[in-house]
Length: 180
Image (cartoon, rainbow, N blue to C red; front, side):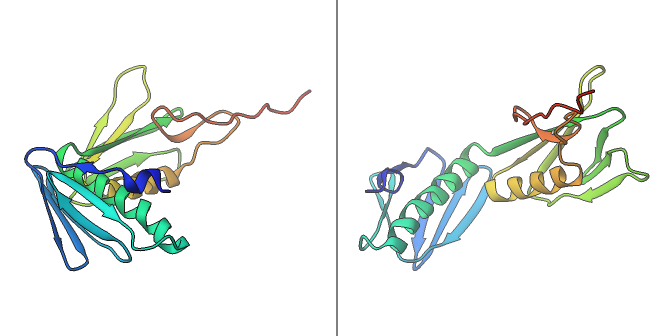
């Protein structure tokens, strides 16, 4: 029995959910998202979205929980939005943005300039004595995660000193150095 797939999704005020053929469209104050689905039934009843599967086959069970989670993420995204924060740990590591261009100084011989998708709002926070923070906000959870992973991939945190780009609150596995 799928615990996630059977949970109904409450639709908050200001959010509309439409199901046509094999496409779920969610509209809210922050934007509009759509997701196609297969092998499950999506129904709207009394202000709640229900995802049901036709049988107990392994494929249907997997898609039951998947599509319920995707629809729930879409509803939360268009009503509240999703945020990821990245922290630059290292001497001389800097971040700045001009509009949708992110400029990163990560200890390479050149700065990395990255164009950010227009659906993602970007903000850089630089305070004296603290590590720079890059804040990404959007209504699309998948897009925010993809952009954050791309930025993190420029300089992943290394296990000895912890230098690199990490998510705020991420616990790194540290290693001891050489023993003399």
